[in-house]
Image 1 (cartoon, rainbow, N blue to C red):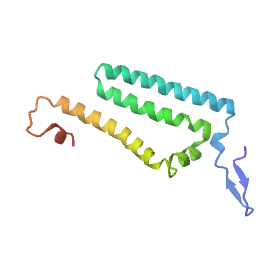
Image 2: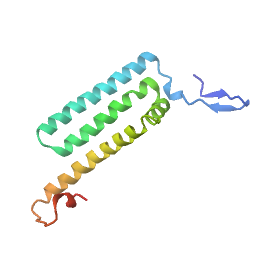
Image 3: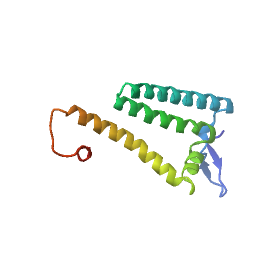
Image 4: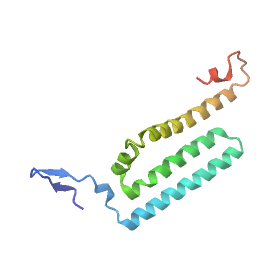
Length: 131
């Protein structure tokens, strides 16, 4: 696949699909590898949750979800994936999904900091100490 193609106006335009020059078989291998890694991280996150290690759980859980979402990039390509995720019917769900991933990390880290400061007694309610 050439790096530059002949444009409609006669000029050269950069080919946006140069990163997708993998064969279909290689794309499937990458998809399966990325998704399998996401499943392993997700399983490990559940293990850490059972041990009540909230920060480890949240980090592994978040990266597991990002990898699972990213695995489909190998099948459809990054631009098409982004267009599908930000389509009118999916945009609200996509925004909520990203916000919840960020909040998962934020809350776990803040709760851990709160637990580490257990010696310090405060009269503020728990939910006010998070922010």
